[in-house]
Length: 502
Image 1: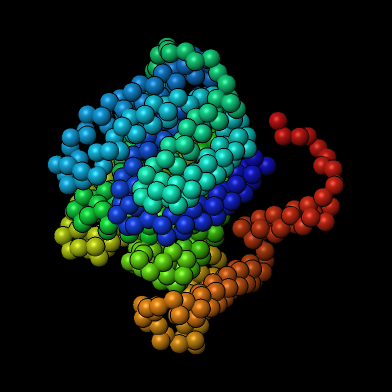
Image 2 (image 1 turned 30 degrees about the vertical axis):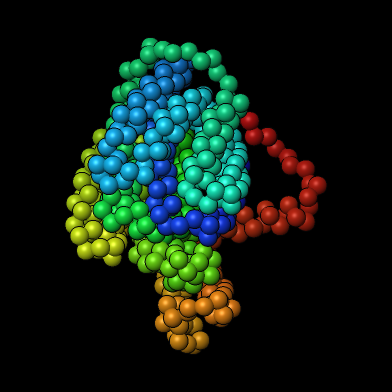
């Protein structure tokens, strides 16, 4: 039930996040987005480190107060070190051609401490598979961010709207963790060995993976300028919004869930396959469909000034769908204890991404975009290499378990291309539209393609499922979920029987 709540809240947050992104994109410039992108990368990095430090509490068999105090102490040390680092690096920003970032350093110093002051005890809810508290944390912080970002963007019309909103959202997260999981604050390193031995490789692996994901953004901004960085940020954000961001809360379920299955059953491989099938069945059609209508989406929803972001979506959206598999692989590696292998993979990938991006930016924005696509492809390839240790034990196994989704997506592509030819391509894929008078026709074509794509994908998926004798899988999960919703609507007062969730 908690996992379902987390996923449902994720859908709500992504819709809210998309609305927020659309509004502020219409109010701010690409340069504002480029400046804010560096700030958001820094805060996301701090959040990732803080979470990785506490992840060991899920794996330890017997968590004590000393473990909690040790993790809290690690968080404080990290926060102070990060604050000092941001303050010390202020003079470097003008030297690398980004003087605009100097004014962000004081805010980052304060945020480093706010992020560090979170309750480690909060993650024990995830250990017990009680994800409703995590859903509350994510939802409330997203609502705070949306309200402040939109309000301040309307007033200030610059990047400080995003900075202020992110600051308030992160402060809300910290307050929520202590409200839901209060604990006695005490500095101690008594259990440092138990925590450090696991965290060192997992944290190193996550740091390398984080920078391999964000290095294209950082290098584009430093070499091609903040405006191009803003365009890339928006296109990449839209691509990840329906892939990795959509399932980011579900990723909080994967590791505790697989750890619990590993402790109590021998069905780890079956669970791994099912997770891969579920992820691809949802993110693959959405990401590919977004790429097919990217030009319409950008012009109709966001505005003409962001048309360059459509190119980013064309290249990255389908690849990001396959990249979601690496979170399943990461969780399985944590359960197995193969964190050193994960670190080696991610460090190699980071080195490769840096080389590709430095070569790509020499050919301008399109060269950088091609390099980012190549980097994403390399991430998928290395993920599949490690995935051979789990599930079907084959290289393409994590993808082929979702073969019905792949076939359905191909049929969807064919249908949308057929519609393209049927309604005409006078717009030359949207590029010839110049005035607001053209928007009604553009909206019509956008709506037609989206509806036909959704209908064809769903219909093909269930047809294939029937042809192979209705095996247990994504389709049966959807039908069970639909029946639950129907029963709730038809019998809203029906009492549940059986043990309540603890």
